[in-house]
Image 1 (tube, helix red, strand yellow):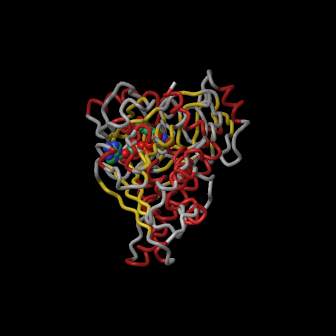
Image 2 (tube, helix red, strand yellow):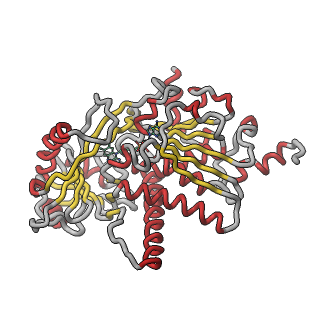
Length: 439
Ligand SMILES: Cc1cc2nc3c(=O)[nH]c(=O)nc-3n(C[C@H](O)[C@H](O)[C@H](O)COP(=O)(O)OP(=O)(O)OC[C@H]3O[C@@H](n4cnc5c(N)ncnc54)[C@H](O)[C@@H]3O)c2cc1C
C-alpha cells in the first residue's frame, strides 16, 4: 500500500512507465492515470489509428499492463487510408519542404520499415513451416516520384529543389533524363525527380503494421514482462458515450467521419472531400511494360506504380459529396475516368493502352489553411465530451491529402501525450485550432 506521498505515487505513474518522458504532467492528472491496468480505445484502423496503436505499445514501458482495443466499422484500411494512392514524400506541389517535413518523413519511413520487417519475418515463418513462399506481398516500391514542370511552376520548382532534405533529395532533370527514367514520358519543359520518394500499397502496409503491433505484444510476453494486449473489433462506434468509463483514454482517429460522432458534430474545423481512384492494368498481350525501376508520376493526375502491369490513377476532388462509401457506381467511375485519363495521358500517353479494372473512393478530412500550411488537428478534446467518467478523449484528425507523410510523427506525438496525460507535449501549432474555435 502507498503512503499517500505524491513522490511514491509518482513511481507508479505511467509517466515513469514511458520509455522517454516528453515532460511532466500536472499532479491533478494523477487520479485519472493511476489504475493497475491501462485500457486505451483507438477509434479507426487507418494510418492515424494504427500509428497511434504502434507508438502506444512502443513507448509504454515494459512493466506497464496495457490493453489496446481498436474499433473500426469496416476493418483495417476501411477509410481513406485503404484507397489512397500510397505516394509519400515531404514536399508541397511547389517542391517546398512542408512544415516539420523532416520529422514527418523520418517517422513515416521508420513505420514503413517496421511494417515491412513484420511481413518479411512472417514470410520466413511460412517458408520454414510449409515451404510455400508467397512473392506477392511487397508493400513498398522504392522507385522515386517524378513531377513534370509546367511553364507556370518551372522556376519555383527548380528554386525550391535546392533546399531539399538530404534524406529525400530533389533533382532537377531535363526531358532526356526524364525519358531515361520513364520511357515515352512526355515532359514539355523539364521535371523534378525525388529518387527516395516511395509508393506503397496502402492495404498491405496497414495489415503489416497491425501484424507488427501484434508481434510487439507477443515479444513482450516472451520476455516475461507484464501483460500487453491488442485487439481489433470490427464494430461501429455511434457515440463516444457508448465506451465512456471503460477506458483510461479514447483516441479518435476516424478521419473524415470524426465529425459524425454526435459529441464532435459541428466542433471540428474540417472539410470533407471525396476522391475516386482507378485501378489500371496493362493486358498481357501488350509488350509496353512500365519500366522495372520507373518512378510514379505526380501531376494534375497521378500514376502510382504498383508493378510493371499494375497502376493506380488518381484522383478526383469532390468537395460537395456526403458519400462515405468506398464503392463507386458505374456512373461515378465513368466521370472519374473522363476527368483523369486526359490529364494522365498528357504526361504518359501509353496509359491509353491500360485497361480499367475498377474504382474505389475515400473521403479526405481537410484541415484549415494556416500560414504554415494545412496542418492536421490534434489534442485533448475532453471539453467537447462530458468527461466526468474519468476517461480522457483525444483527437488525431485532418490528415488531409498527406496522411502517409503525417501519420508516423503524429502517432508518436499522440502516444506520448496519451501516456503522460499531457497535451503540452504536442506542438502548439497542432492544437491551436481549439483556441481559434473559442474566439
Ligand atoms: C483518393 C485519395 C487518395 C489519396 N492519396 C494519398 C497519397 O497518395 N498519399 C498520402 O499521403 N495521402 C493520400 N490520401 C490521403 C490519406 O488517405 C488520408 O490523409 C489518410 O488516409 C487519413 O487517415 P486517417 O487514419 O485519419 O483516416 P481513415 O483512413 O479514413 O481512417 C478512419 C477509419 O475509421 C473508421 N471509422 C469511421 N467511422 C467509424 C465509426 N463510427 N466507428 C468505427 N470506425 C469508424 C473507417 O472505417 C476508417 O477505417 C489520399 C486520400 C484519398 C481520398
